[in-house]
Every structure is written in C-alpha cells, then in structure tokens.
Image (cartoon, rainbow, N blue to C red; front, side):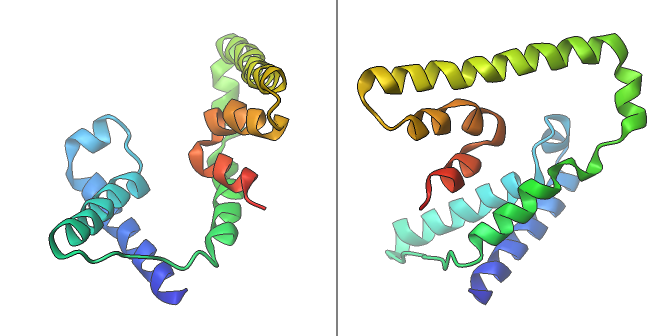
Length: 142
C-alpha cells in the first residue's frame, strides 16, 4: 500500500516537472497526473513487453484518494472570477444543466429498453461524461 502511494506520488512529480518543461503540454492544458501517468504506463508496458514483468498495485487507498480528489476539485473556484463571466456564463450554465439531464435520460432509457440495471446507464451518462472514467469506476464498485 505504501509503495503504491509512493509510486503514484513519484509519477505525479514527474508529470508536474514534465508539464512545466514541455510547451505542448502547457498549451493544451494537459494535467500533470495525466502526463506523469502516461510516462508511467509506458514504462510498465515496456517492463511487461521486454522483460515479461507484470506490475500490480494495492488498491486499498484508491477510494480514499479518489474521494479526496473529487471533493477538492472545486476548491480553486473564485466567485470574483465567476461574476466576471456575466450573462455568457449563465447561458453556458443553463446549457450544461440541460446537457447533463440528457446525458442521464438517454442512457437510462436505453438500459431500460435493453433490460440492464439503470445504474449502468447512470455510469454511462453524466457520471463518466463529467467526472471521467475514474468517477464512473468508483460509482460502480461494490
């Protein structure tokens, strides 16, 4: 568990360094965890492909870290900046709320027609569209 957390922290530091140094990553706003994770994924792929070494991780802290991350996502929000958005921001908010409703209604309707658990529809809807695949994975785990 501790080694897994340490490797994750190391991958994050590598990603932060890489994102600061590579203009392409800054220009397209690639998050540090993504750039570090890609490097780490390529390294583990190379280990497996060349040396037949399979890397596995302890997932004990996964839920705790995911909960902390998704809880803290909005901490950087600033009401002063939001007020500067004005009318255009309100229009975008209304459109996004409508889109999120559609993202939930469509997959839930499809799963109902197919006879599949509606929670699968929710995971395929706004949960994964807004929060990403990690959020959907956390939602479906028992």
